[in-house]
Length: 115
Image (cartoon, rainbow, N blue to C red; front, side, top):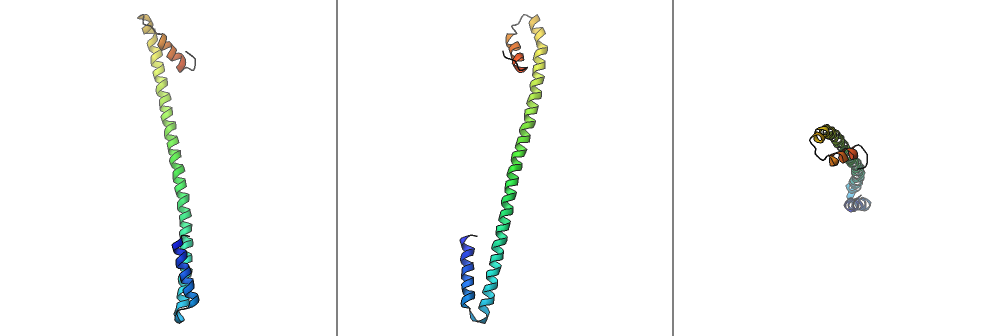
């Protein structure tokens, strides 16, 4: 509970104890009870809000992770396509007398070997 509701609650309780005619005590006691109820409800709603913020935050990370997984899968697929295209070009490059050492090293690395 913040200081403002506490101060108001103390004032209402003091007024209820001191009495302000025949009507002061019941009105102040009711106001103090209502203020306590509202403070408790505010705290309950604050806890719910924090819980939802945490869930939204976690859900945001889950979405980001899934996006990264999809992007990674797309990159792996594209790399596989590029590797196959490079392999397909080697016989022609060899036939033309081009130096294919770099292409062969790239293929070896792409297939998990060492150049």
